[in-house]
View 1 (cartoon, rainbow, N blue to C red):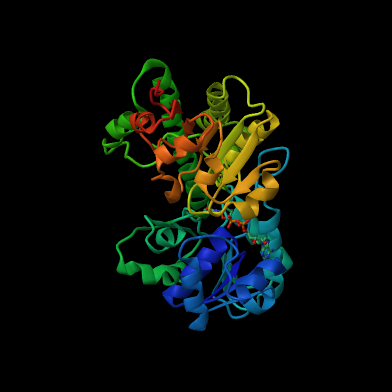
View 2: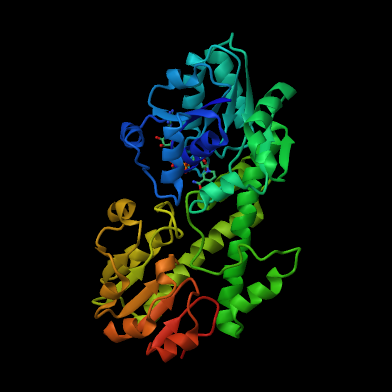
Length: 438
Ligand code: NAD
């Protein structure tokens, strides 16, 4: 199959590379000349484990190329995927569909033969029909179908998720489009995975419902964690105890500093907004959004307590600022709430992150970037473990404690055990949903 992929961000690039690895001929398009320039030079503009090798392999095989020329990419394509951003629209919480509609119009202007226009971006119910109208209006004679194919990959494990999905969701209006979509995903059939073929609206709704559900699960355990801190109990044990129940499942039950990232915050807000607009308030999702904000603020209070009530003049080392490990993505990361609060409170903030600096430097003004946790801990008053990168999971706690002016740690990912922190010489250690060390 010949595929054009519009947008070479986290989703578009991974999807394009993986489709080419299936054997399809893929042309990836972006309007950002910097991104296309880097891709043409064989550089991956984002950090995603394994993506560089897979990309080079398929470029060398002649199946994958990059261009800014949308017309060239769309000519002869069996399917054109729209994988552009759908950020929160300023002011009202809705998903901003400007980029999706602009891409649809651009496709319509250059497409000549039958093509399936597939929306991979996360979009509200009704958007695919809008895409169809936009194309119809711009090119009334074009023979085409639309399809909704929401993406469920996780940054940091994107290739594995794309190659071994739990399911593929495809929303279509007829068999012709369904056949093209089935052919695109056919190489995956070697593995047993369900392809959920639905109408357009169900496919669109599945994506928002999935993300809102996952955000709810995380927020639920975070709230239980807060209660454990007051009444006793270890949230890790509680999560294990409930997660072994097959009806609940053990995933997404790790208590932490609140969810962030490029999807959950914006998708929960968009779902809540859609509900309000249609007089069916999404009360659970609305509460999740509110509670998640409170959780992030509660983290600041925790740090404040560890600093004796004031950040002023304190030296604080923050380990990890990306919204999760194995990505350079900083969008809506908890660090964007926490670090400014520390800097604003008068602390000297040192930041260490294996991949976050490129994006994070501009987003965290006043923070001093360092490349090593031990150096950052030197003479510090507090160590905050904020993102659980592998390199922060087996730190020599004794060595860290020795270097600090005041050996105190806030382990906001529950990586370490309170007793180990105590044994290593920490005078205070706070985590999430577990009794403090002292
Ligand atoms: P992104 O911001 O990383 O990438 C979007 C890219 O599209 C940018 O490079 C931009 O330059 C390009 N673009 C915009 N308009 C264009 C146009 N008209 N022509 C060519 N290129 C254009 O976004 P992302 O994180 O990849 O997300 C894309 C969509 O996928 C969003 O709707 C998001 O909600 C959804 N999604 C994201 C993830 C994730 O983990 N990031 C997971 C599942 C779904």
